[in-house]
Length: 147
Image 1 (tube, rainbow, N blue to C red):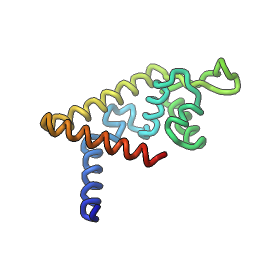
Image 2 (cartoon, rainbow, N blue to C red):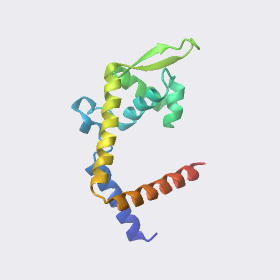
Image 3 (cartoon, rainbow, N blue to C red):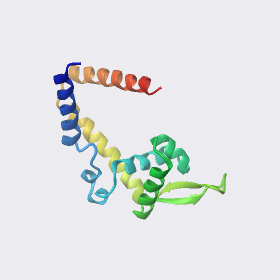
């Protein structure tokens, strides 16, 4: 890839994320203004594995223990989740979403749907099909590179 192509790709990716508010939880509601996007992703990961432990969510997010502790502490202080003793292993905690946490996940999912709709609205059916093929190829390449 030529240097000018790399610069243009970088510019377009940043413009897309910024214009669609993809990394700004406060766009979905003022109650999320102080939440880093990683915290929102933690809430989504907890929904995906009901009653999951801190270790499980940490592994899904790929963050170190110290980062996960900070995420859980912030979310608990904010009223988004609760820690409960894990009934299967009394030495650990399960993470449970509160109604506020469930609402945050629903708003995040709704935000993603709005982003997808905004992108699709700019494209013809043929362009959208091409974009989906290209993004699937990129996703596959990234997954293979991570192995």
